[in-house]
Image (cartoon, rainbow, N blue to C red):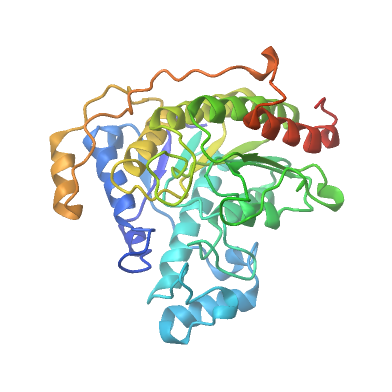
Length: 390
């Protein structure tokens, strides 16, 4: 197996553009890619493109009628069928929507194939992680669910167990729905509580059904949760489940919208804590999945201050060349930020909170603390279904 990491990229992904004033500004993708280059990480990874996902691949997750609806809206945005979630405020139709959405899906599928076949140990597609798309509809800025498609492709190639860990601020509802009854896929989502955030799902009691009962795990975090609580929750739930499941491949989704500057949510997590979770996912892949790791992007709407730094850290970690938090960002990149956005770019690869500390769950918990209540609710709902102690 090659030890070299792959970074999936095609400049055409910046065409995933819902229009002016939409939060999903594709400049976040372009600026991330440029920051990877500015810090020299492009020399540490193999940069690879992939074919757009074809219809047979899309059908691994999505219904044929939905695929045809996306194609029709892509050809004529005015004809978008809102019954499929297309042409809405969240998911406006735009020309070429099918082509660029299937390209992003193809990049994630290509990442999964590369890791499974041994072409790379790790593969990153920060343009992906579009976890809200459902089998029969668009939702939450997501047209095709590339994360689910990558997992489905791994199963098609022979993977017996795939673990999916989603740390986006929003619940990974589309991935959970795709594998709700499939015991081969363990989905774990840490997200802001559904009482206060879209998509209003991801309660601890959502644990799967049928043969997949116990294969869905949800941690619903109180609004306002910061670094220590977020990391405490992650480490109180994720490592034990992954260790028990022993996946063939670990797929992770790293939405950057948990950050305290994100305009669409209410957690208070720093860039440094996001980096700490990326490091932890990398370690889990090596400890329990033979190193096989597919890492995806996701949400993130502080498109200058947060997203490029967070996902550049992810690329560095996957490449085995982690970027030191105190690293000064090259002036050339900051000039490009201003030229593109008329905003001032960040100066360093840190929010000044590194190293981030948290309290281990094993040391005890406070039953009156809202964060600990959330963790305990998850453990009580899901762990016994997997034969683990709550």
